[in-house]
Amino acid sequence: MTPSYTLKILADFASAHTLRDYPGDCSRLHGHNWKVEVEVTATALNEHEMGMDFKTIKTATRELAKTLDHRYLNDIPPFDVRNPTAENIAQHFYQHLSNTLNIDTARVSAVTLWETERACVRYTED
Image (cartoon, rainbow, N blue to C red; front, top):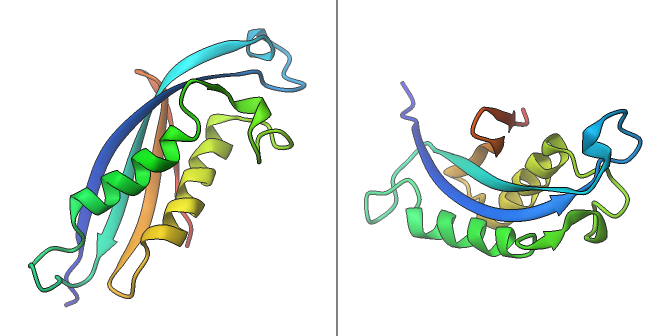
């Protein structure tokens, strides 16, 4: 049986957006205090007996979140073209963090983006 370790960190940022062509209140400028959960799945432990150092995951996530923090998302690529929905923001985190963090024995497996305390989206890829 292959071992599997799921590591999870939590980061946050605040930003504003408008949803283009949305038939409701969210088409107007509004903001959120977003929470980002990043899951990394490891199949082996490194020389320190870690799947991946939490510090490595936190640093990469916080650096990416900083590019969106206290910003109007509609002005920032790719959201200047793509609608800055929770789904698209979660995908953005997943793809960027995968490029930064993935190694042979550990990969980003999911990103959950919380828009409010009661609403989130979880993004994964097969």
